[in-house]
Image (tube, rainbow, N blue to C red; front, top):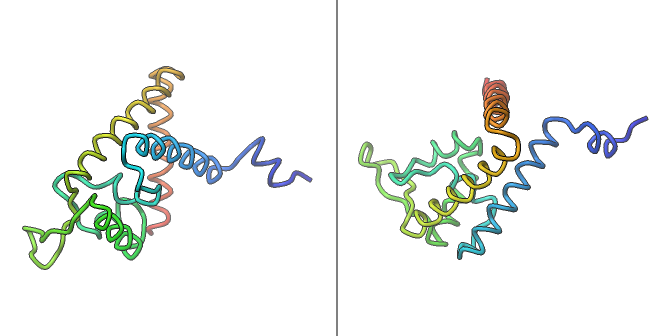
Length: 153
């Protein structure tokens, strides 16, 4: 009988592969960000920072985009407010709602993270070849979106 460890070593399932990829990317991203002066961030903050725009988003939209619960996003936003990366502002479209908006430090972090992620993707595209990488990414997007639709229905 094949053990789970053996199976994961020789033929890992999609969940194991996705987890390995996520954790490896997070390690590179957050260690590089730390070296650039953003050493107070943690991978959990990515649920907000990966999706926020300069104009800001409502917490409910951040939850939808990230796939996290609204309560989790609320806690992460509180942490990021305390760290100086985001602030809550009234939504001009609905004064009862709040937008989560990046501060100047948040915008600087976003630019740094975008550069790190672009370099990471470029490295893989160069290593695999642009056509192979593009096909891989398109296929991965399809799998992710299909899985997300199944869990939302």
